[in-house]
Length: 104
Image 1 (spheres, rainbow, N blue to C red):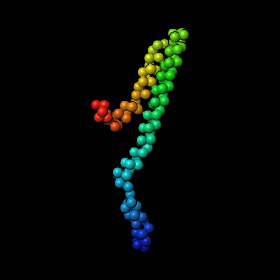
Image 2: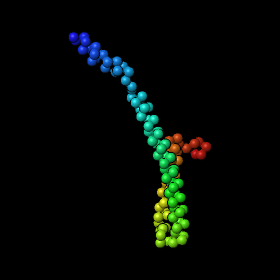
Image 3: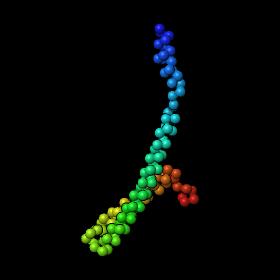
Image 4: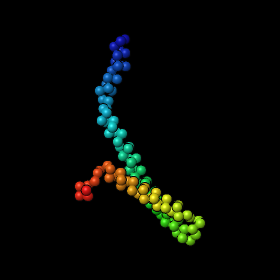
């Protein structure tokens, strides 16, 4: 009876323990989703930044017609947000890969 219990309950855990992934394999498996999310955030920030600059241009066109409809502060804030969001992916690439030698 004891041999049966040993074979049924303990030997599968020993077999699975021999094939368990190490810390390096777990870290590699976790890096792929992180790369996908960082690529998505970079692409989304470019799109939202371009949309913010476009909205700032359209608000400026409204401001030229009637300054009370679209105040200049809204336009300035949209331009700043657009520039920051467009620069965000490039700053990330710069910090990830460093400055090339021919530029430094």
